[in-house]
Amino acid sequence: MPLAVPQPAELTLIRQQAVQDLPAEIQAMIKASHIPAENLSVYIRDLNANGPMVVHNENVARNPASTMKLVTTWTALKLLSPSFTWKTEVWGRGTFKDGVLNGDLILKGYGDPFLTEEYFWQLLHNLRLKGFKEIRGNLIIDNSYFDLPVQDGAAFDGQPSRVYNALPSALMYNFQATRLLFEPDETQQKVSITPFPQIAGLQLDNRMKLTQGNCQKQHYTPSFSQTGNQFVATGTYATGCGKNFVLRVISTPEQHVFNAFRDIWQSQGGVFNGQLIVGHVQAGDVLVHTHESLTLGEQIRFINKWSNNVMARQVFLTTGAQKFGEPATLDKGRMAVAEVLQKAGIDYKGMVMENGSGLSRVERVSAHQLGLLLEAAWRDPYMPEFMASMPLLGEDGTLARRFKDDDLRGRSHMKTGTLNDATAIAGYMLTRSGK
Image (cartoon, rainbow, N blue to C red; front, side, top):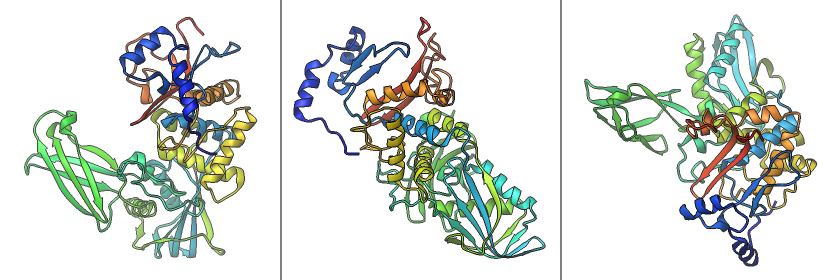
C-alpha cells in the first residue's frame, strides 16, 4: 500500500475549499487555535441518513495516531470472531518422575497480548498442580510464531524504556514491562528502587532524590536511561507518594519471560536453577500444559480504551497469521486488513499500515475511510463488542476526564489518538436530540 502524499495541485485545491464547508462554530474554533483549515479533516454522518452531514478534506490521507487501532481491532473481530483465544504452551524435554523434570522446560507463545503477571502466575500454578516441583534443565523460550525483522525500541522517539514503545513478541509477559517499586526511606533520606522480576546483572544507578511534601507531579518525576546492563534513575520523589510502581522496558522479551518464570516459580515453592535458551519445540518434546487467554472480545477493550500499542501490534500480527498461516509477519497483517476492508466495500487506496497501532510516522488513513469503517461496523453483528471497546466519554479510558461534569457524559464511545504532530478522534455519539 503506497504512501499517499498530496501533490501541489491537490494542496491548492484543499486551500481553496479551506473553511467554506465547515460550520461557523468550527471555523471559529480552528481560527482561535491557529489551526490551518487545510490541516483538518472531518467526516460526520447520521447513521440513519443517506449521506454525511459535514465533510472537509475527508479524502486526504492523514496520520491517524491511535485511531488506527479501530482498523486493527475491527479487522480482528471480523476474521477471528470475538470468542477467539490465544494459547501459550508448556512442553517438556527429558524424563519426568516424582515431580522432577530431568531436562528442559519449553514455553511457546502464540501472540497472547494479555499474558499479564496474574495469568502467568496462574499458568505456572497449574503446572505445579500437575505435579511439577523441580526442573533440572534450562528454560527454552520459543518465539518462532512471529517472524519479525530486527526491531529497535528507540526508533520512534528515542525512548526505548517507555512501555508505549514495547516491541511485539510471540511470548510476551506483562507488556514487556518491568515493575519498579519506588519506596521513600525517610530515615536514610533516600528512595529505594526494587525491580520485579529481578534482573540478573542489572547495575542500577539510583540517583533519585527524596523530597518532603505531598505527592504532586513535580515531586514524582523519575527519568531513566540505559546502556547495556547499566540503568540510571534520576529525578525527585516526594515522601507523600509512599510506595508506587513505575513500569519500564528493561530486558529483551525472552529475558523478561525468563526472569518472571524464575521468580514466580520459586515463589510458588518450585525449584529451578537453569539458564535461558532461545530455541524451538522439537520432535519428541511432550506437551504438558496449555494456557488459554482472555477472548479477543475482552482484550480489545484494553486495547482501545487504554490505547495499548503493543497489544494492538500483537493482534495485528495474529490476524495475519490466522488468515495466511504461520509464522506471523507484518505483510500478512496488512493483507488481512486489506481483505476485510475490501469485503466491506471500503476503498483502502492511500491507506498505510506500518504496525497497526498508530505509533508510527508513516501510517495513513482518511477521515472518509474511518467513517466508512464505523458505518460498516455499526451494521455488523459484532457491533456491540466493537463499540464497547472504545472509551466512554467522561467515564473511562482515555476519555475519562473529558466532559466529566457535562450532560454529554456517557453519550459517546470514541477512540482518541495523539502524537506530536497529529490529533484524532473517531467513534459514535448519541446526540442530545437522540440521534
